[in-house]
Image 1 (cartoon, helix red, strand yellow):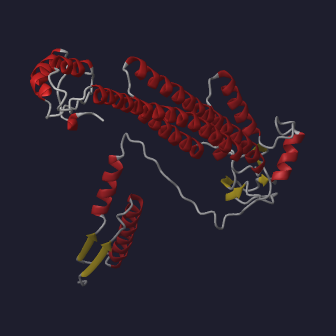
Image 2 (spheres, rainbow, N blue to C red; image 1 turned 180 degrees about the vertical axis):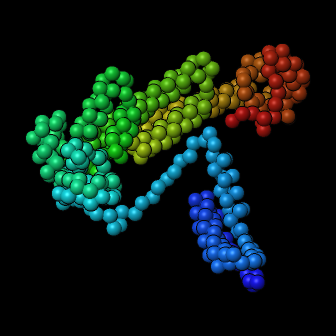
Length: 398
C-alpha cells in the first residue's frame, strides 16, 4: 500500500491589475495540474490517497478588477501615456535604414524649420512640431531638415517652392488675414489670434520673428485706442465740469464759496485722471511731457477763475463793511442822541432810526437819551411790520 501524499500549492497574485492577477492564477493552476499529474503517474495502479490543499489569494483581486472593468461600461475613458525619449534614437542627421521602434524626429537644432521627411514603404510623410516621437518601421528612411527642404522645393510644393519654410504657418496666416478682412476684428482680438499662432509655431525661429512683428503692430493699435479714449475722457471732463458750474450759478444761484470748492474739486479730479493716464498707457517721454504741459495750462486757467472768485468774495465783504461803516457814520454824525442837551426830538429820532433800517443793520442807541427810551417801542413794532427780525450779533452770518 502506497503512502499517502500531501501536496500544498499556494496561489498568489497582484490584484492591482486584472491581467496580472489572471495570469498569475493561470500559472499557479498550471503548476498544480503538472504536479498533480506527476504524482498520479507515480501512484499509477496503486491504492493511493492524495490530499491537495490549495490557497487562493487572487479571488478578491480578480473580483475587484472585474468590478472595475464593469464600471467602465458605456463610459469614455481617457488614457494618458507618458514616454521617456531618453535612449530613443534621435534622427537629426537622418538615417538611410531605420530600426523598428520609437524614434525622435524634427530634432535638428539651428534651423528655422526642423521638420523631416519620412519615407515609409515608398510613401512620404511629415510631422509638425519639434522633437516629435514617432513609430518607425524597419527600413524607413528619414531625411534631414535641409534635405527635406530641397526635396519639397524640387517637387514644387506650395510655400516651399516660393522660399517659405513653413507652409502650415502660411496657411494659418492667410486664414487669419481673411478673417480680419471679413470681420470687425478689434486690435485686442487680433493680438489674441497672433499669440495663438505664436504658441503653435514657436519652434520655427523664422516664423517667430514675423509673428513678433505682428504682435507689436497689434499692441501699437491697442495703445493708440487707449490714448484716444483717455484724451477724449479728459476733454469731456473739462467741458462738462465747466458747464455744470455755470449751470449751477445761473439756475441754482450757486454762491461764490461753492464755486470755489467746485473748481478745486474739478482740478483735483483732473490731476488724478492725468496721473492714471500716463502710468497705465504706453506714452513716450515726449508725449508725457506734452500731457503735463497741457495739465498745467489748464491748472493756470482754473486757478485764475478761483482767484477771481476769491477777489469777488473779498470785494463783497469789503463793500458790505464800507456800506455799514457809512451808515453808522451817517447815524453817528446826524443823530446825536448821545448829547443830553439835545432832547425832545422824538419825531426826529423815529425818522433817523427807521430811515436807516436794512438787512443786517446794527443800530447804536444811547441809553442816556430820553428820546430813545420814548420811541424804542414804536420803532420795534414798525421794523417788525417791515418784515425784519431782531437777532443777537452772535446769530449773524459772517
